[in-house]
Image (tube, rainbow, N blue to C red; front, side):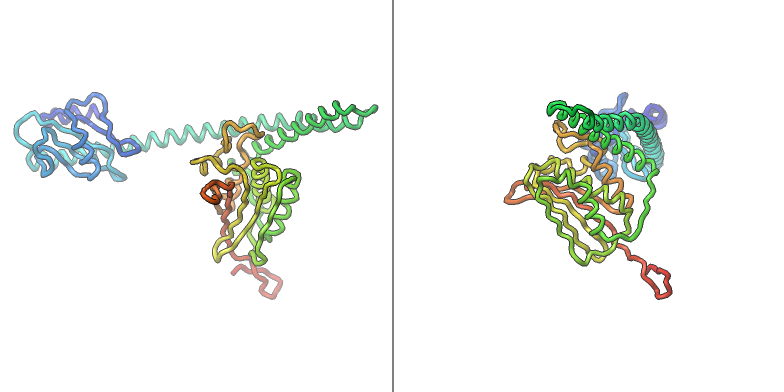
Length: 368
């Protein structure tokens, strides 16, 4: 496009030209092959204000070149720098022709940009689809041998004569490692199903207290040695949830809090309701979230600390976000502070409140 424009401008206006395009930070960068001298200060001024500048204009008329902004429908794409070889500035008719050329050039550049965006998005989607398919296939292949390892390690405990203390310790270690790996495999499968839309929601109006109670029971082993505080108001409304999936969210958050906090520290689960939303949070007394990682930790295969020796592959929070978003809610992580220093992490879930169906006296339910 730049070469075609340069040939046309040279023939039509007897001018040398250079093309400068804006990057994501709105800084101009000159394309290779430009012939006209470029004053970056004048070019940036023209780009920032979307106005022509330089020779023949009311702004910096002493400049040897004319700078024209490339205004496309969505944004200014860059500027065109024109060095006229003649001594006279452009008249009204040539100026209108130049503006038309600049507009067509800007539209062409914008179309090329969005074609590249679409191509990149397609590649990313296909790569993600392939990765999910591979993860799903590998995970399915791992489930059977992992189940066999757990079963065999349990069977070792029933052998006669009984295992020695050292042998028992090895058998227990095998079993624990197999169970941890099995949990990670299940996470991989769940994430693949959620992203593929193969995990439909089975929603019903649920009391949050019951879902929280189930999550606490399911994570009781992980929470051993922690001081647990549950603060749920008595007037919490019913929520339209898939109880099984939402329990999984709470279990992941509670186990995550236990994983990153020392024994004896406190973990708090609380909630509050407004007229439109219900917020639920899990607080811990761990090291908090790394600076700038509050969004990144919800990506797949991301962990709070890249150098962490704690087991896990970084899928728990990604699964939480996928489930919460499927419910029309949002989840975020932040650091709690006390006396100017980090006092731990907080994960907050916000869900739409909605209105549960009401019995109209005929045995049928109606939604207000």
